Length: 59
Image 1 (cartoon, one colour):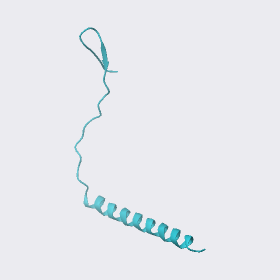
Image 2 (cartoon, one colour; image 1 turned 45 degrees about the vertical axis):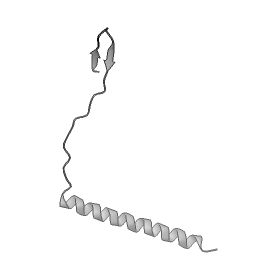
Image 3 (cartoon, helix red, strand yellow; image 1 turned 135 degrees about the vertical axis):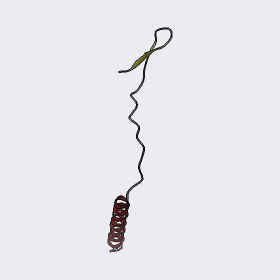
Image 4 (cartoon, rainbow, N blue to C red; image 1 turned 90 degrees about the horizontal axis):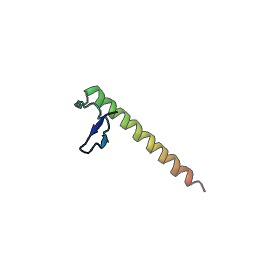
């Protein structure tokens, strides 16, 4: 662990900082995959809502 000694002999324990990196913009393939996954999620949620409403109106 990394300790620093201050004046008076006190020890401070600092967290290890993560390695920094520069974010890169998504490629065209990644953008296409985001659109596909978003569309699939929208279809799934819409389908679940349709089933929930159709089942609840049976009585």
